[in-house]
Image (tube, rainbow, N blue to C red; front, side, top):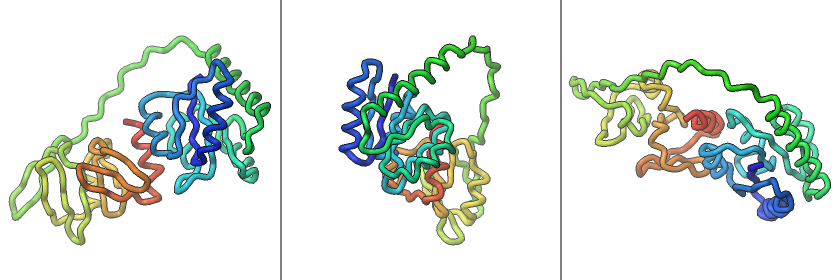
Length: 241
C-alpha cells in the first residue's frame, strides 16, 4: 500500500512515518509539509492512501481534497475534533485520527483501508475496451493588430498575458507585444485547454509553468500571482494535464 503524509507539523509527520514502518505492507513514498510539493508527486504517480492534516497555512486539508480529480483513500489526522463531523462530506475520507495518534486506533484505520482496497480488487471487472476520444484541436495561431498590421503568433509560444489598463501585454518565446484589447477577450480567443486565468490581471499558459510556490507561479523569469479563489481551480486544471 503506497501512501504519503501531508502535515505542516514535523513531529506529526515523524509519528506517522514511525507507525507506517511497523506495517510491512505499507510503503511511505512521500512526507510533505506543503500541499504544492504533494501535488507534484501526485501528478506523477498514484497512491493508495493519504494521511492528511486539516489545518495548514494558506491551504486546508479539505481544500486539498477538492483539488484532486480522483482522490485516493484519506485518513485525517488532526487535533481539532470539532472538524470530525465535516469528514462525512467526503467519500474518500475513511477515518479520523485525533492527535496525538493512538497506535491502536492507527492500526484500526489501516485495517479499514486494507479491507476497502481488497474489496476494490475483488470487484474489479475485466477492462472494457474504450473507444478513442476525439483529440482536442485548439487554435494553433492567433492574429493580433499592431499599428494596423496583423501579426501571426503561435499560440503555444505565448507564455502569459498581462492586463495593463486598456491594453494587454503578450509575452512569450520571442514575443513581446502590447495590444489594445482586454484580458477577457484574450481568454476567449486562446484555447482553454492550455490557458488559465490565475489572477484578474494574468492569463497563463499552463504548459509554461516552471514552478509553483505558495501563491505565485514562475513562468520564464516572471513571477505571477495566484488569486486565492483561483488556487483550487488551478490545481484541478493541472491534474488533468
